Figure: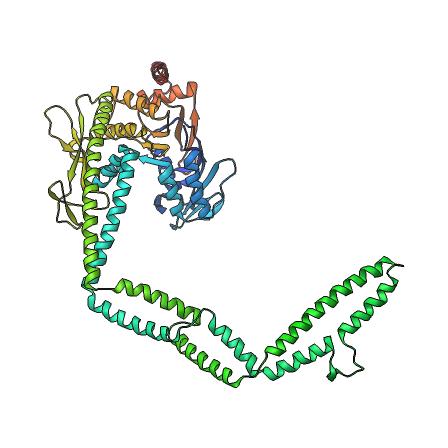
Length: 592
């Protein structure tokens, strides 16, 4: 078993549960208890932990908030995918591969979520839940009765090759709709597009005439500043140069820096043989002299190139005025003006309504429509092939669930044309197409030979529907899906041999998945790897419930209570022990 295991669940202040902890195992976990003890609150707590809707009415008035904490251990590829998303959300998973999740709901209806001790949006818990856990109860059965859910279930069963084909179809379909929508918009809004294009061209023409260059406004500003202050700059540079290199204007009695450095070097060099420390200082003065000589050369070059050019200054003022004219209209600076021009050029391409472009788009639309129709046909054929396999496998499971004469059919039908979605000719018939293909998928049940083939919601009773859902889940177990499966009384309306078969199949699921089952059937509970009992405490002023693990004699007593309502009956306990022995034999792996 790999992927994810919920190792512990703690629930505080939710419904009748005051404070309890459920230690869970990686196999089959069964939760039992008397009616009203709070078994459903365990499933409700799981739903909250994984981002479910918060119901403030279920929060106990004392302490005024419900808290659900969970310890989730992640492994394999699922760990990489989940942890990557959580790190993006700011959470910090533990280094040992465990993940601490928490959800708090107050009596006022406020809700908070934490992962790894960090606050995260509740939607992050929902994303984790979608990958980690699948809850099956009466409401979840109803969800699977929706056509879109049935189509999605069939696509998952069909396998990786089908999903790859479906992904390619969706990509092509999206491209087709983008081209078709673009063409329709250009035709519908030709006048508005033409007016917008004219305004953009005026702006582009003005910018093209000025031809601004990147960073030009700053470069011109700096150059103009130098020309405007040329005399002061020349004086400063001249004085600095004379101080360093000397000159006639400095006077014969004013030694220059170069001469002083040379004199100092010679003085130290004369004594460097006596003390090497003076030799080191003389070397550093040599470096300083070289640097001063470089500065003197650069100052000389600066003075040679510094010229008060009134004509150049006038040209600079005119160019800067032209650039300011652009920045007043299009952006804050020249670089922004250039970026505006680039965007405007791109937008002009989008606004094109020329006959040539419209014809080109129409040809592309027709080409893509042909590809979509071809791929939709391939997706339909793949679904029909998978539907036969899926129906056969679920039907085989129903035989083992005491429905030997029942048969499942999976109808893959073309979508009728003329609805909100576009349509294309597929296989010679005009068919509606959407992002998921051109098919409507419907699960049908033939309850017995001669019975009509009816949709599940019409052809199955409550107990039959529970068994069909379980059969589907057993089939899905072979093709992946969430690693943790929760069944909330899906065995309602079932008894006898069918109950034993449900227990056997849940135990089979538990070989590859973590399974949590809330049940009232002892035949199912006997197959558990861990048996937890929810018990009421009516001793105080307020009724509360807690959860405990039962083993050996305690477990037999709980099964006896479930069998006959008499936990202390010797006959009931003997029957329970027999049931446990049968389940233990059934759970042993078959040789080979």
